[in-house]
Image 1 (cartoon, one colour):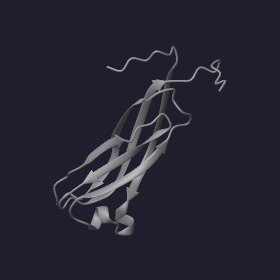
Image 2 (cartoon, helix red, strand yellow; image 1 turned 30 degrees about the vertical axis):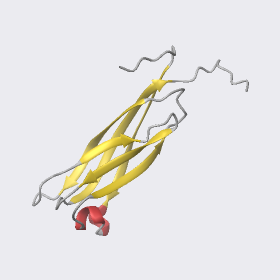
Image 3 (cartoon, helix red, strand yellow; image 1 turned 180 degrees about the vertical axis):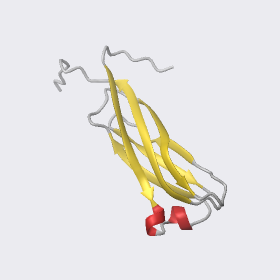
Image 4 (cartoon, one colour; image 1 turned 120 degrees about the horizontal axis):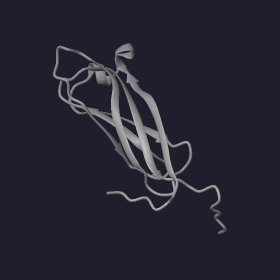
Length: 116
């Protein structure tokens, strides 16, 4: 369990189209084997500590002729941002993916001063 000491809870969220490989014959649509797309996300402002980050697929467009395999995660989480990572493998053909994310963590108090 993550316990937040601050009386201020910061919440940031967003949505991003990770790729649209159907339009460009990109590797997610035409390739096989392990494939990965990584997008660096920056928070609107830095948290005071490490936030909890959740990610989810909010739109997917996959070929129905192959198995649908997908893994999405938040990696390299810092107070300033994280990497949003989508992976697939084998013969899965992914045309496009949109993902939403939400980060919750201790926010900086506007009355806090960094003196040094």
